[in-house]
Image (tube, rainbow, N blue to C red; front, side, top):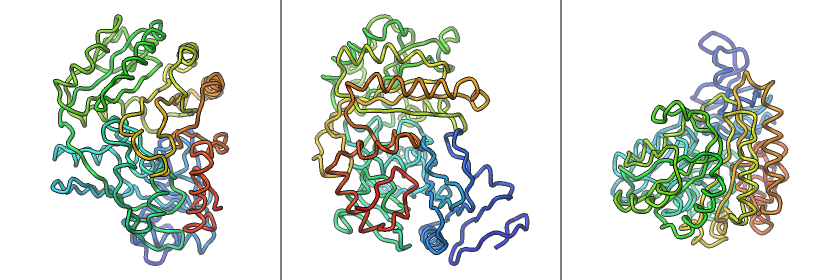
Amino acid sequence: MQSSSGTHVMEIDGFRGQLITVGQSDYDTVRAVWNGAVDRRPRLIARCSGSADVAAAVRFARDHDLEIAVRGGGHNVAGTAVCDEGIVIDLSMMRAVSVDATRRTAAVHGGALWGDVDHETQAHGLATTGGIVGHTGVAGLTLGGGLGWLMRKHGLTVDNLLAAEVVTAEGSIIRASADEHPDLFWALRGGGGNFGVVTSFRFALHPVGPTVMAGPVFWAADDTIDVLRFYRDFVAGAPDELGTVVRLGTVPPFPAIPEDFHWRPAIAVASCYAGDVEEGERAVRDLRRFGTPLVDLVEPKPYVAHQGAIDETVPHGWHYYWKATNLTGLSDAVISVVADHAYTASSPRSYAVMFHMGGAVSRILHDATAYAGRDVAHNIVIEGVWLPEESGQHATAETAWARGFLDALEPHREGVYVNFLDSDDDTSRVREAYGDRIYRRLAGVKAKYDPDNAFHHNKNIPPG
């Protein structure tokens, strides 16, 4: 095979997509992932056009003993979508979404982003639980569990997964569902990319929007303890329809926010009501009236607009470093730790985010899927963020800030969401994300479908 520039590249039998190697003009662009701090140089990038290409690429990699990385959206903070020296099986050209409005299902290809899904499903007034950033990949978010605005009403993304097409470590194409390879289907719903390459998903959809009551309310950082104590009681009695996320950092420079508030330390509670707009207005009324807000951006808006509202605050190419944990609760002690640490980062782009779980998430049987955090009420992800040109100024400081923040929460930690784990220093925490019972079961499924651990460039669960 020849590239458009005439450079000789590797050939893969039966492959119809695009093969990119070192030296081609688009190599650096295609190997880049969301986290600009990740800089890896694969030997070959196989941009697949469909499942047959994925299967051919897997067989090629196994035959040539190549390290395998799998790229869906490329959005994972640890950068597992790209490897050094090996092959990247890249699904980013496979972004089709097909909606069956009658059956309320969607077929989604493995390289799709959540913005692609929302765009198609909302044309029918339907949605499923997806990430809170539109350029997050469907595959990675789903396979780890899938947190989003709709989860308290409609469950996690994995709770809405009906079937998946999977390319196995042998290069075979199989279907996993409740009736076909049910052990694999169980493992895919929370066990990450350990078991094969998922080339398409089928999701259940629900009536949502297209207009929802949603948006953030900001208060000054000095009000953090009071806001979080109020929030703790407010969400304890919240209806399932109300999804909320707390953000602690600085005020993003949104056009709708007065410039005087831009980059000012602040706490925000963002919400989205998955139901009637008037009911949503009543549900968030007390939140909006609490204390003295700096800015209130809660209003009726298109669901797709809310889903993409923070996309520009976490763009591709910035440098990101995360630490995360599930919390035992929002006790006064936890609130004090959060208030003491949230605003001490050196970069104005760094922040912490807390998700309120519960609702439909907690009503699924604990062992029904591989997602282990059914009893978690709140979790937190601590996000060090800086510009590439600021690495000398912020990289070490933000890493230390995130680690110190997590250490301070040690007495209040209980497990972790696998999709929030960062790079090598989080490797030992994979078992923590599942607990011993689910981890052992996942290792057994891994031994059946990938006994050689060919798919290990991920939050790895070795065969056992």
